[in-house]
Image (cartoon, rainbow, N blue to C red; front, side, top):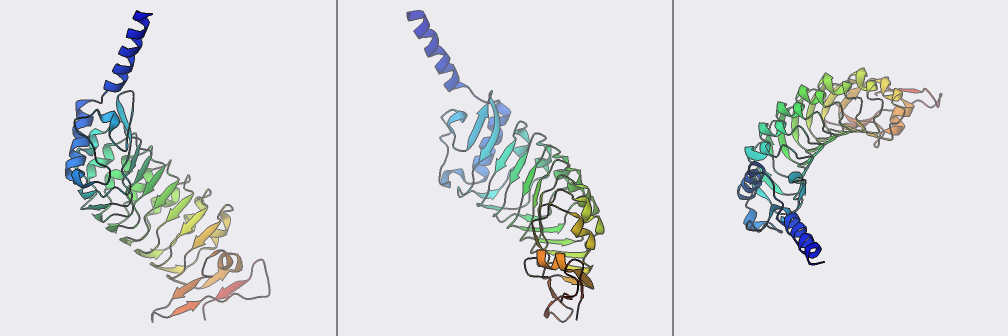
Length: 284
């Protein structure tokens, strides 16, 4: 019995002392120091095992998840984050992170979920994001990101949620986005996007929520939107779309197709009442 008890104690001690690789620990320490870890709401005891650090999930001595949401992180995300090669989930939501998203983040090939929304991140979305081919959810909304949406985003064929709203992104929606057939949620509202919405949007056959609200998109609202049978929520108002629009699309849009004309005046696209199924409306 003594031998069994001793063995159990050794096994428990071994589990407690389980640790991550020096490379991963270095990355965590860089993250801690670069984001003012001593001032976090829930900080780390750097002398304790990594397995005890708040928000860090370790499996088989590998860091697989980090959730430091709403934890008073400030400063810039360090490039050493690339060393967390086993990371599947990174959540830094609602903090005060600043600076650019490091291009090195594109080396986290195991990442499935990335949420850095509600920070103060600036600069471009790095093209290296296109390397995160396992990614299923990308949430960068409520930041200060600028520049174009990189076409490389279209390589994320497993992505279900792309949420980039409330930034300062400009340029047109990359054509590669229309090939992301796994997308269920596409939220690009409150940016500075221009150009037209391609009829290829109909390729997003699994889309359930589309928001392009408050941009500078123009041209015809593609009737092809009606081909997305599962579309439950849509808001494309407060753009500069013009021409004809179907009754079905007008009713689906939250604000019934309220647009802003060249004079900056809000106008609602009117719908003819004759045909309930296929009535068209022209801009006054």
